[in-house]
Image (cartoon, rainbow over all chains, first blue to last red; front, side):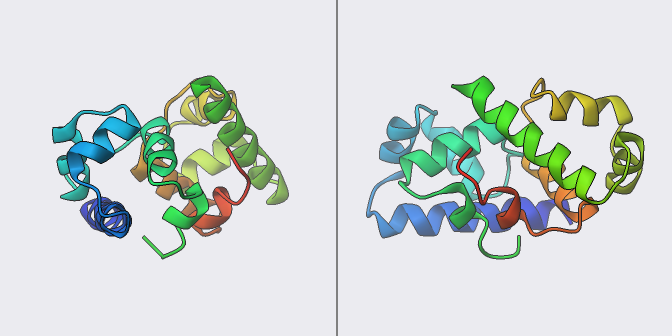
Length: 72
Length: 72
């Protein structure tokens, strides 16, 4: 169950990043996070914290609620 | 900034819990988390992870998107 949550969240981040046509490296730079961390998030390998979720939402220019529109 | 995010999230959890008229202990039981952890979340003292956010949303019987409706 937990992996499914992280996998789904990772896919949403990847989709939103690709909408902006930016690389993982660029998203990491905008969010103030490490490039490898972005890769791990997109692959569902990290149980991300609320503060980093907030950083990603800001970097992706979307409200937090939009990140969780779909049922995770 | 980060404290504000955690404080706002804590207030939302507390408000949703009180809507259900349940104690921190009951919410902890329903979410499979420790009672003291719920107190820390509500006081904005913990940078909660996505999996625990998901557990709380389920225990509060609300979709994740609702937890983040307001701008944190």
